[in-house]
Image (cartoon, rainbow, N blue to C red; front, side):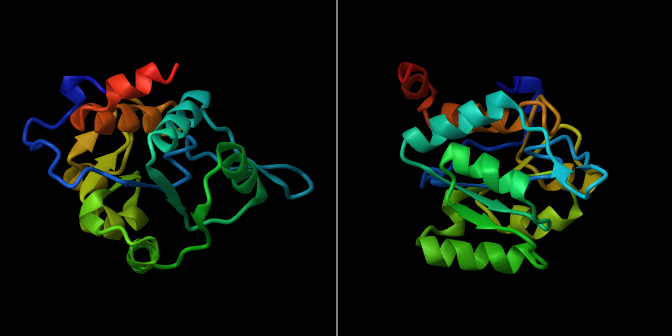
Length: 180
C-alpha cells in the first residue's frame, strides 16, 4: 500500500459517490513501459502478479475496471481475459473522448471514476475523472495533476497500491482482506 508520504498532503478525502470504475493505462502502469518485440514481431509484456490480485479484489467487491490504451496487442487481451476484465479500448487516439463514451455506456459519472496514468496521453482522462492517480515514475505533468502518487513504479505493483489506497479511503480495505 502507498505510504502517507506518497500521498499528497493537499489531497482531500475521497468524495462521495465512491469510486465505482477504475480506469487504467497499460504501458507504464500495468507494465514497466518496456516493449519487448521478438524476431517474429510478436510483442511480449510483463505484468505484476500483485496488480492482478488487486484487480480481482476490486472486482469481487462489485466494482468495474476498464482499460484505455493507445496500443493494441494480444498479450494484453490474454491478461485481461485471465482477470475477467471486459472493458477494453485499445488503439485509442483520443483517451478523453473514449473515457467520456465509456462513462456514458456504463452509466457511471466521471466523478465516480479513478484513473491511473503515467504519461501525457493520460492527461485528458486524469483531468476528467473523479480521482487522478499517478504511478511513482510518471511524467512530471501527470504527477502535477494527481491527487495520489503510488509508492511503486508502473509495472511493479503500482495498480495494487492504487487499489489499496482507494479502498482504504472508502473504508473497504478490511472487506477486501476478509475475502481471503
